[in-house]
Amino acid sequence: MGTVTLGVSIAVPEPHGSLLQERRAGFGDPAAHGIPTHVTLLPPTEVDAADLPAIEAHLAEVAAGGRPFPMRLSGTGTFRPLSPVVFVQVVEGAEACTWLQKQVRDASGPVARELQFPYHPHVTVAHAIDEAAMDRAYEELSSYEAEWSCTGFALYEQGADGVWRKLREFPFAGPAVPPQAAAPADHGTLPAR
Image (tube, rainbow, N blue to C red; front, top):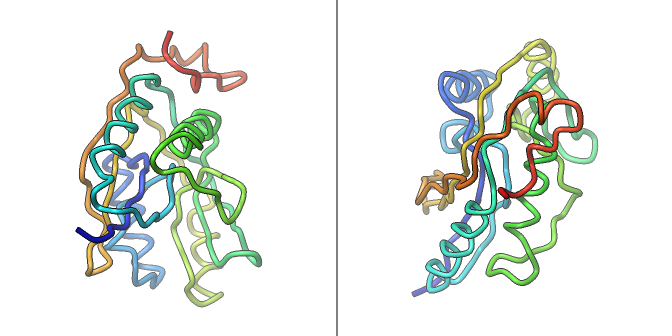
């Protein structure tokens, strides 16, 4: 049956997703149109295709333990010089993303894996392009703002053409976290009760 490359992420909804994807393409990032705008929960991971049903069952269980939470993007950041990435910062919802990615990668689950770098939720807007274009991305999106209610996450597969395609969405089962309850400490990340 072979292997497939999967990823799990929170999609940045419209109109924000398309806008950031177009901006990424405009900075000269050749991967822009093959990668939907997202916050990663599981980076590209090669798995046995036969494991897909178990992975989907695991992700459904993770989603059943979560609940919608507020997400807000604001301003830019970079991982340079460690990694050639410019990103839009997740300033609300980061704790929830951190909780979710730990559940997705749980050592007892089918996609357990170590990360190359410590987890830092973000939305990539430039990757591995020339330094001047990276600087331009950092400056031009420095005042960017977007917010929405995150209601779940999705499983994606990378095709042979390098394009990431959504396989399935996993909506959260719990009730939404009221914004005032999540605001100070951002505890909208905890499992549904």
